Amino acid sequence: MTVAGKMRQYQVVGRKAATEDNANPEAYRMIIFAPNAVIAKSKFWYYMHQFRKMKKTTGEILDCVELVEKNSRIIKNYGIWLRYSSRSGTHNMYREYRDLTLTGAVSQLYNEMAGRHRTRPRSIQIIRTATLAASELKRPNGMQFAKRNVKFPLPHRVASAKRNVKALSDKTFTTNRPTTFLG
Amino acid sequence: MVFKRYVEVGRVVLVNYGPDAGKLATIIDIVDQNKCLIDGPSTGVARQVIPYGRIALTDLTVKISRNARQKSLTAAWTEADVLAKWESSSWAKKLAAKKKRASLNDFDRFKVMVARKQKSSIIAKKMKEIAA
Image: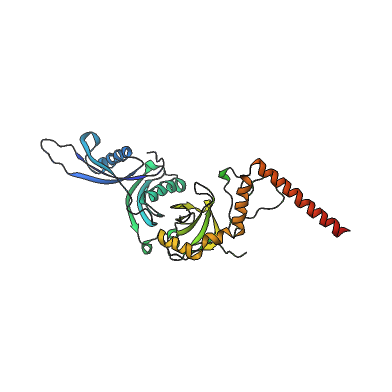
C-alpha cells in the first residue's frame, strides 16, 4: 500500500455474509493501521482471508471507525511487534519508538523499516502494539531518553542545506571558518 | 570548549523556522535525539513536537517539571521574568535591530544616511585634533 502522510488507526468489524443456514455468523474485529479508511477495509480483507475462510465477496464489513489517540499531549513509549519479508525470508521483529501518538510511532516504524531494511510497506504486517512504561523498554535508544533529568548539549550545529541555505555559510566564498559551536 | 546550553526540560528556546519563527518557547519534554516537545503559552507557541534544527537554545531556563501544564509554565515564566531578561539580552537586541533595519522606508534610510555622515564628521574632527 502507499503510505502517504501520517498513518491512522481503524477498528474494522466484519463477518461472513448471512445465509439461510447461518443467519448470524461470527463477527471479527481487527485494528488496522492505514492512511485512510479505504485502504483499512482492504487490509481487513487481506488479513481476514489469511486467517479465516472469508473474503470480500463472501463477507461484509459491518463497521470501520477511526480510533483517535486518547492523550496526544504527552510522549509515550511504544513497542511494536511486526512481521516483515526481506529478500531472503520472512522474519519477526520487535521495535520501540517514542512518540506522542501510536499512529505517529507506526509512521516512524514504516519510515525506519524502509530506511534500515529497504522494506516496502506492502511487506510489513503489524502483529501487536503496546504502550510501555519506561521500565519495560528493551532498546537502549529509547531507554536513555525515558529517564528523569535528561540533559545534553547540541555540540555541532550545522545549518540545514535543505533550506536553500548553503551549509555552514550564506556566502559562496568567505575568509573565515564558520563556527558550529553555539554554546 | 565547555557546553553551557543544554537541551533539558525548562530550557527557553527561540524558534527560528516555521510559522512560529522568532518566538520564544520552553522545552517541556524530550522525545529523542532529534526532536523535543515545546510549549509557549506566553508567546503564542502551541504545544508541539519540533526538531532541534528548528530551534536555537538560549541561556535562559525556567524551573518546571516535565510535561508542565500551561498554567504552571506561564507562572514559572513570570517568576523567572523570562521576557524581560530576553529583551535585555544582546541577542534579542540584535534581532530587533535587524528587523527594524529591514522595515525602514525610504525617508528612514535617508535619515540613517544623514546620521552616519554626521557621526563620521564628528569622528574625523576628533581624529584631526588628536593627530595635531
